Amino acid sequence: MPSLDYFYFFILKNKILKNVCYTELIYDRINKKLGIDLSKKKIEKLITEIIKNIYENSITKIDKNYYLQNIQKIFKLQSTLIFLELLL
Image 1: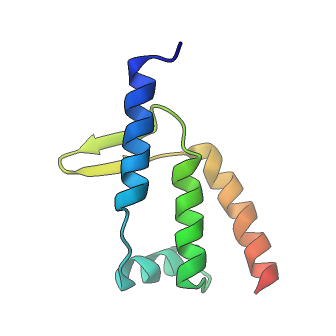
Image 2 (image 1 turned 90 degrees about the horizontal axis):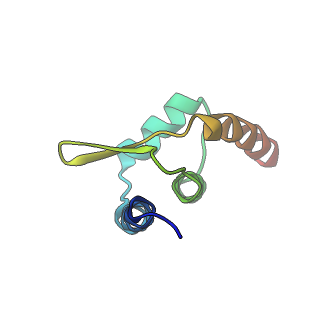
């Protein structure tokens, strides 16, 4: 049976997915950091997939902000970006 920590993690992850918001600054920062020009829709899909696939113990709360870390996903993200560049 999964632990209470797992249920809390699952609820928190879904709450983050429901409440994530995007601004022009976010789109610009992501494109600048990645060095490409993805559409808003592609950025939102990419971020959603990263959040959906994040592992337990990878969410940290500092003050009112949540920070997600997924080292394994970074490598997948790089591969995805290469693939997306080929589609553009």
